[in-house]
Length: 258
Image 1: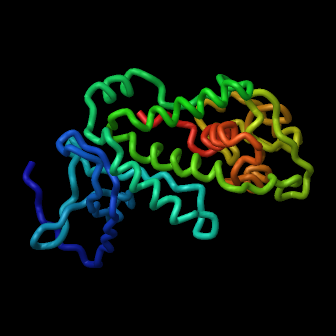
Image 2: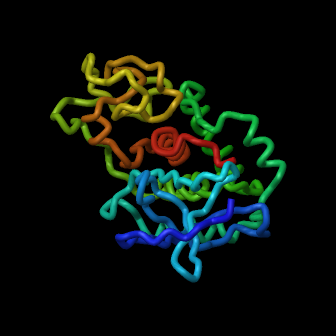
């Protein structure tokens, strides 16, 4: 079906973003510009391109508008270290192996991208995870590689800096303690019945946590909203840099970069 021009009664705001990405038709990780707009009918955030008469909706393989999935960063204007982030972006762009990889794409297609906290029950396994993540940053990328690689580099650089102790109380004034085993990266108040069962409820860190209980810990599992708000994107206070890095990845960005 040929695209058609529709003149709307109201103006449509267009948002242009600089996007760091990897693509099969480009020899390196690069920065491109991406246009987004709110669809006037569905209210979805859709991808667009500029044409002479205005903008045109980008179409996916099934002919429908391409909807942008936007995952919000846990960092805010106050907590984000912009110089650290800029350094990480530069390192990802200029690493030795930046060409899109078909081998990496096939491997990524056939395996689960989530890092399961239950696999990392002790400090040795956390250290092993930290080393494996850093080694993976030298592997040739695919499209989905870029975001986790940048943020994992960010968390690693943060882990070698001076870090404050984690809070002893949550947002509700309840005392909190670290969990045990695979729950060690999280702070829990131990209250019962304060966590919703749905995996999308506040405090659900990832899909692998969907079978955890409705209690806030106390040893492992989901956090209640108060504990989540108090810990949020704070760095781990573990004295071991590698353990701290692995804990932050499992809590904030629990995905593989390929």
